[in-house]
Each structure stands twice: as C-alpha cells, then as structure tokens.
Amino acid sequence: MKAKAVVFTEKRKVEVLEVTTPEPAPHDVVVETRFSWISNGTEGSFLRGERINGETPYREDDPWPFPYTAGYQSTGVVIDVGSEVSGVQAGDWVFCTVGRVEGMFEPFAGHISPKVAHYSQIWPLPEGVSPEAVSGLVLVQVGYNCGTRPPVAVGDTALVIGDGMVGQWAAQTLHWRGATVILAGKHDERLAFFGGKHRRHLVNVKKESLGDAIEQLAPSGLHILVDTVGVLQTVRDCLPFMREDGHIVSAGFNRTDSLLDIQKLRFGEQTFYSPSGWQKKRMDEALALVAAGYLDTAALITHRFRVDEAARAWRLILDRTEPVLGVILTW
Image (tube, rainbow, N blue to C red):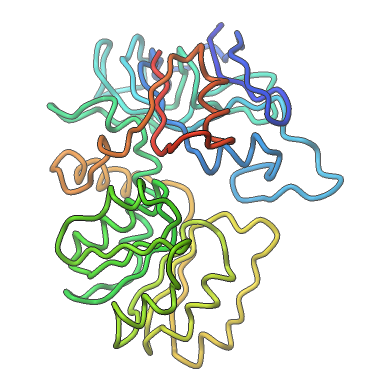
C-alpha cells in the first residue's frame, strides 16, 4: 500500500515522498490525514541528528537515524476499519498517533497519509471539537502528564521552565489544578499566550534573573519545579529555592547531560518525576480537558503549511526566522 509521508532523508533535509505501508490487518484502522501537528522539539532534534529514538541521544559511532518518517500526531477521517475493530467507522473524525511504514529507520510514522494504525492508537473526536486544534494531542498529553504528576494544593507555587508547547500545557494544567504558576522562557510572544489571568506570572530569562524573580514571586519557596526543555543546569540552579517536600518534574530531552545529584534532593526530601511517552488514560483525560475548554490548544497555533511545503515548515522551526510555536501541516 502506498502513502505520502514527510521524510527526513539526512540531517536538516526534509522531503515529501511516496512510501510503502503494510497492508491493513484486522485490528487496523486506515485514516486519511487532514491535519498533523509538528513536535518542534522532538522532531527538530531528530532532524539535527541529536537523537536516534525518542529518549536516546545520538553518540559518536551510532547510526544516523535516516531516512526517518517524522511525527506522531494527526487528525483525519477514517476510510477503512478492520474486522476486529469496533467503536469507529468509515467517515468518523479521529485523532491518531502513529501508523506503520516500511523501509525507514523506524517502522512508525506520524506525518503520513493514508495512515495504517492499530486501533489502540485511535481516538474518536468528541462532537464540536476542532480537528485542527486537537491534532497535537500527544504533546498536549505530555504537558498534562507533567502538570498532573506532583500533588497540588490550591495556592501552591509552581515554576515551569520552558515557554514551548509542552511548557504551555504543563503550566495550563497546573493552573487548572489550583497552583500559582510562574512560566519562565525566552520569548515574549510565547509567554504572552499564558499571561493575563490571576495566578499566572511570566519571566523572560533573557531580560531578568530567574532567581530574583523566584524570590519576588515565591518568597516562601517553590512547591513544584517542572523542566520541559532539558537544561538540567537551570534545574540545579533552582534547587535552592525549593521548599521541603517539594516536587521536581523533568520532561525535557537532556541529550548527554542527564546527571542530577540525588543527595541534594534528599536534603529537602524532594520527589523527582520523569514522565515520558503517552498512554490511553492520559490521552483520554487530556482530550476531555481540551473538549471542555480547560486546556487551550488553538491559541498556540502560529503557522499552517500545506504538506508539500513541509521543508519550509521545518526550516522555520530550525532557523527561527520569525516567532513560531504551533505549526500545522494541512493535507
């Protein structure tokens, strides 16, 4: 079976190619992709050759992860269902994570159409939900995962490091749970997406000291620290501001710098969480919160490209020639 897919053919080179997918099996759903949401961080690091799979950084003598069919999240319309599938039918709008592909570095693909996927990777869309707005549901779930790991009492202060999409949704989740949230990043235009509401504070670390901001905004210390960018030195710098019995969440890709002194965490009896990946329960919960309006996704979309313009989309993400956050490919 043939399909169109976005393929990273070598470092920093993106092509839209015809690829081969396995024939659908009885437990498969075939989806015609309409919208796919780029994961700027994960997919960008693959394209730069910084990792060889989801959690493994590239090291010297590792094989280059090319050709690689990018992505892991999209929405579309069901065009066929296997005999062992129930709950969806042709014509339904669904969210889908990855489908299968042949002849690539990994046997899975997100930016591909039609997509042949196991039924466990399919979520029917609730009535009234924008298919475009939930085409990044895996990333929404990553932020939701970060924001639900630590216990939260109303008024607890949480610092989220990173103003990208995962940071935004982690901050939204913590705020929804009752925390006072400090979102720290480097881009005023991104930070502005989270600002403007009670118990939401913004820190541009290019313009002010993060330590000084914490002392001002959280004089009694931080209850929660969430790192979404993978800069452990910033986490280390923030540890002196953590309260006893505080909680640290690390979801960023740390490349080869992944050392954190556990003994220092023991001094404050602090708990460390390392969320990764996606699972059905969290996906269900994240989708329900988007449908109910508690998590905002559509506001984070800054760019849309036709799939045939995929190379332009990733060039923008890598080179940052203009402010960019959520990037959608339209099929």
